[in-house]
Image (cartoon, rainbow, N blue to C red; front, side, top):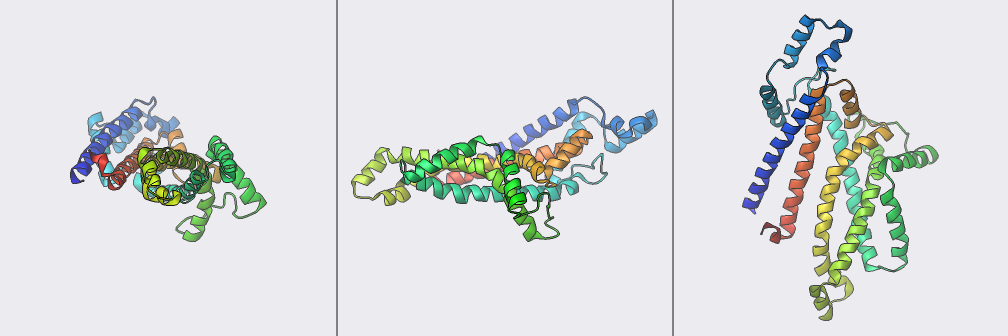
Length: 313
């Protein structure tokens, strides 16, 4: 177990270094000069040179890249060109918003899809299966932002369960903050719930036809006992992998949902920073999203090993 974790950590660090280099190189090759964009018509050779020194843009590429890598570990990504404050202090509140939005959406996926997936698999071909399967198909085909618009109209305007655009900061009222996030989180979760139900159902039905399951059934195990004691622990492994992929995807999908519900998260500042060429903010945000995805993949691998030690072989 220890050797497996160390091997995965080494791979994580190597992937992190490669990803950081690619991200930094891409923004280095983007046409345009953020200094000229900031100064506009006030640009003079002296002012341009002074601002380039202030931003550290006069230093060689490799020096600036090493500072960027060091910033990943110290959470020091320099100062924003636009806001003139620390990049991390600018992003940390946005990260909290996206974290809770993704966590709530993932919570909905797990607590809804697992029971429904098992139930539909147990009653395949029955009335519940005939009702849930078409709903699943429809849910998978509707983008999250469209669901967000529908939820805003129905729950916000018609039922008035929440005020559209009435985001409440977690610093002001944490309870109201979580309540408001329930609706965008649900819009984010619905397609993923449908996918998980379909995947879990298919895995259970496939495992139930294998020799070990048929043998256990022939020995007198009833359907419920066979499902929970033998089939489910094998059928759930691909679903856990998929849950890990969903968790990584939600941080990116959440950026779009934020725009629908007017949430001041990573999406708004990412769009504004790209338009103003505030590269330290964009680089830091993209790097944090990439790091989050890597960590989710690492945690998923560890969970796999804990549930099935054969993975290490």
